[in-house]
Amino acid sequence: MTKLSDDILSNKQEIMFGDDSDRIHIECENRELFCVGNNKKGNMKLQITTKEGCDKYSIRTEPQLVTLKSGEACEFEVFLTPFCTMNLCDEIMIISLDLINGKKETTSVKIKAQTENSTRLDYDELIEDKKLGEGSFGIVYKGKYQGNIVAIKKDERNKSRR
Image (cartoon, rainbow, N blue to C red; front, side, top):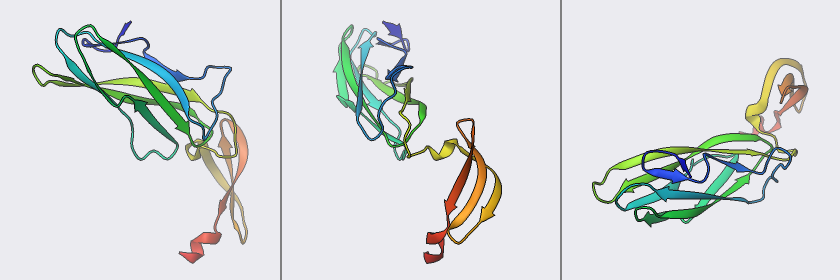
C-alpha cells in the first residue's frame, strides 16, 4: 500500500485508464478500481469528489461515501467517459473526515488516460497561428494540433443568426 497522506493509504498513486499500447474509447464508460485505506486509529468517512462542469469528460465513483474503521480499506470503482480525443492528466480529490475530532482533510490523486483518435478533438490542443483566408462559411487559420501543422476552419454561419 502507498501512503497518500498520513491517514490515507492506497493501492496506487495515480489512476491510469488503459495503458501505453491500449487507448480508451471515447463516449464509452471506462472502469478502473482504486483501493483506499484508513491508517488512523479512529473511524473516518471518505468521499471521492470530481470536477464539475467539465465538457471534455465525465467521471463518477462507486460508492460515493464510505465509513472506514481503523485498518479497513474500501475498493472504489472509478468510471471515466471521455467526450473527445485527448491525453487526460487531471486530479480527483479524496475528502476524509475524522469522526472523532471532526478534522477534514483533502488529498489529490492523479488520473491519466489516452483516448483513441476520433473526429471529436480537444479544442485546447488546437493552437491557432495565422489567418489564411476567409469565405462565406468561415475563416481558415494555419495552426497546430498535437505537434502537426493543420488548417483550422471556424464556422461563421451561425454568428449572424444570434
